[in-house]
Length: 334
Image (spheres, rainbow, N blue to C red):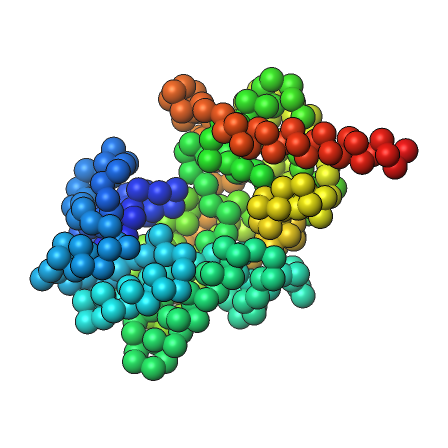
């Protein structure tokens, strides 16, 4: 089976690439070639910018694929361009959406694929919903062979997933340096973190699967953790006790609107995912990596790549700004 990953070198797509190669799929990446070191041996890379329609058409001339996976589609106009580009070129177009698209606030903490899509808080989620609507119309109007996949909070080596960041070593460094870290609310809402290797196990089983066409799936771990326990697991992995300061999500959103949107529109809500649909379609899927193990792998990766232990000044500054404002508000209240 021949598959094309648009992107292919990101947080989720690297694990999916490895899994696809392990399953003897013929894997192509379409990207600008800016991270060639993250493309495993065995991948054929097609260098083109998917946002440049003429360039992509030239690069893909004469090629057809059993499945095309869009890992980096965020806006409906990008998806409309994809439909025009891949119409007649693939038997399955897979769009990576987001579980943050599910209705917020949730009417029930257990989420299924039939949970309505609606998010008044976060532009990212609303754009993903708009993309899904474009694809649903293309499926209904012309039979464009779409499959929608909604990951939740997925991480891999080199990621330290927290509520306010996670693409670098910032939070780990703050914990090691004894600096306070912000956890939203009272730290007791439930969250689901999924290791990318687990996601890939379910995801690759959907490629070339006729039962997946016209359907939507989420693929997540079934481990539910409080946000306090997530940060405590990070502290245990780095070898230091985190100094947690609880701040309401609404207050964080006032001080840092961009980070607050992802809280109010996603992470501030307790979520439990019902994975029965993906397990019916991909019986081999089951999540095996608990967060305590997965975060140790990530920290071990950082220790083996000390040059990657970078601190994002903007994340660090946002922590300090929220903490200072919260302290001031508490003092004023007192």
